[in-house]
Amino acid sequence: MEVVIASSPVDVGIGCWDLRSGSEQLRYRSCSSASRGLFSIVGRYLASSQLRDSPSFASCPIFFWSWDKPQVEVRSFPAEPIGPLVSNSEGTYIMGGGPSGIIYQWEIWSLSEGLLLRSITFPSIIDAIVICPGEHVFYAGGRDGKIYI
Image 1 (tube, rainbow, N blue to C red):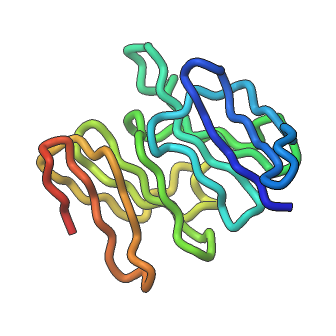
Image 2: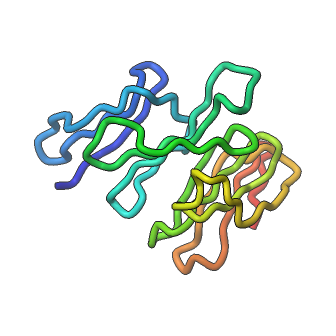
């Protein structure tokens, strides 16, 4: 089954629709996803960075769901709120950008323990991250209008 996933600040949560029939398959209600903060991990899981109106960084986790269950399975609490998220094609690691300009890289299954693999600091808030098809380089879009390689 091919599906479309989307998150909206108007309709709280994530919706999943069957691409052929248009019928809603699942709704993940406990979500406040950031822009570019929602993605599928190798078609088996969903991950979403959470942005909340709170001064506490601890209240801005990353949520993980199994594709077929509406309950959050794993909650990770990074050092700061994470906006954009991206995963490599095998789903072994994810990268996320924070408002401090730091991009964090975690091994996906050690994320709940907070095991950080690497962090890189840029001079701007990171609004987008893309990994090249060969997965040797990533591009970060900064709020300052620059693209960092």
